[in-house]
Length: 242
Ligand code: 1GP
Image (tube, rainbow, N blue to C red):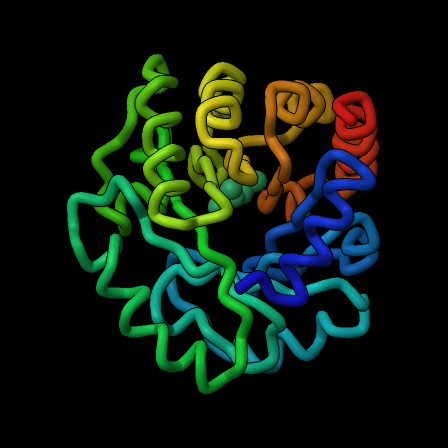
């Protein structure tokens, strides 16, 4: 069943052609004003979180949906609105494909969090980043866009409505336009792209290639002045796609 948050996201997508998610690592401090540019706030990190409930409460004033992006079962909070309910599809360890989400499921139910079924797919150079190490990935080479697209098709057949193509936080370069294009074309599900996106022209290209959502994380900490430009590029490309 499609929940309230997902309906909001789909509506913005229909009207504006693309979405911008800002990822907050609760361990790090950011300039909160930039959150006005986010269609949704993702909260998460791959390396353990303290005081998650308190951090999320502070973000509620911005009136944006707060979606958890859990790095593990401890990344859940009843203060959030929804959670990317993810399987790290190309992990070599079944803990990350199915066990962690299974262990988290009962808490999600009790906390009344809206699960958004999402395939999490890690692509080169993700192995050099935290998610690649922690998630024990079978890294998809950057020159194999067809494999990325096949994972997205598989995700669709599993009933997942979203796929997150991840190059890893702070990645040297982002997921290729071709991988995004083929994934969207083959699966038709909503494609989220993140990792290593730091410039507005790159965000623009990714949306034109087929990304429905662009995620930036590091930018909020290191170059908050770029956030507005990225937002504008995403919305321009989104409108051009409609
Ligand atoms: C990480 O894709 C996100 O999961 C964001 O990556 O920190 O490189 O923007 P960056």
